Image 1 (cartoon, rainbow, N blue to C red):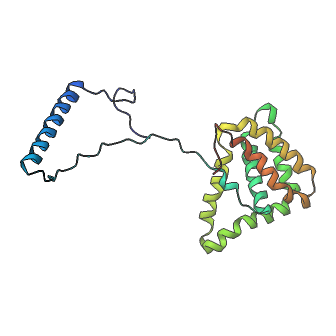
Image 2 (image 1 turned 90 degrees about the vertical axis):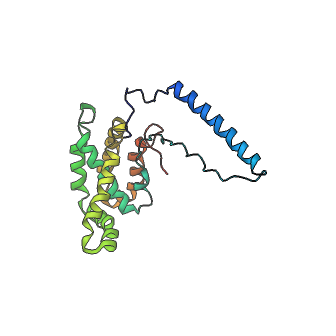
Image 3 (image 1 turned 90 degrees about the horizontal axis):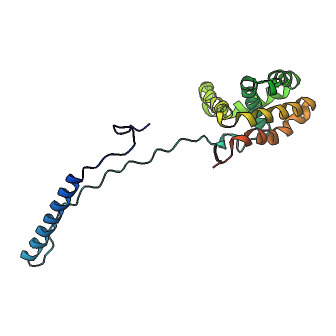
Length: 201
C-alpha cells in the first residue's frame, strides 16, 4: 500500500510563498532565454528541458478474475464445482445453511468415481507440462480456485447457491453429474461476478 503523507489526509500542503517565488524565478528565466535568442541573431539556443513532474499513480484495489473457471472441459468443470462446494462446506456454517457440509460429504461418497476422474482430468495438463514437478504448480492453481470462492464479498448468496447445487447433485445419477457441472459452476461463481465484486475479463 502506498505510504500516505504526514497528517493522514492524503494530500500535501503547498507553501504558497514558495510557489510565488517559483513563478517569479520562472518569469526571469523566460526573459533571459528570450534575450539570449535576440543576441544570438535569432538562432535557437540549446536549453535543458525542465524536469518532468513526479506523478503518483492512483491506488487501485486488485480484483480477482473469474478466468480461472473459463475454458474448462466438463470433467474439469466438475472438479472446480467440487472445489467451490468444498469452500462452501467449510464456510457456510450459519443456521440457514447448516446442511451444506453434510450434503457435501454425501456428494463425495455418491459420486466418488466420477470425481476421481475429474481430478485426473484437472491434473493431467500439469503433469504433462511439468513432469515429476507438477504438484507445486497444481497446488498454486488449486489455491487460486479456493481463494476465488472464499472471497467475503458474496458469501451469503454463494452459500444459498451451494445448497441448491448440492441438492441437485445428490439427486442425480453419477452418469449425469459431469454434464451438470458446467451450469452448476456458472451458478456458483455468479454471486462473485457482480459489479461490486469482480468482473470477468
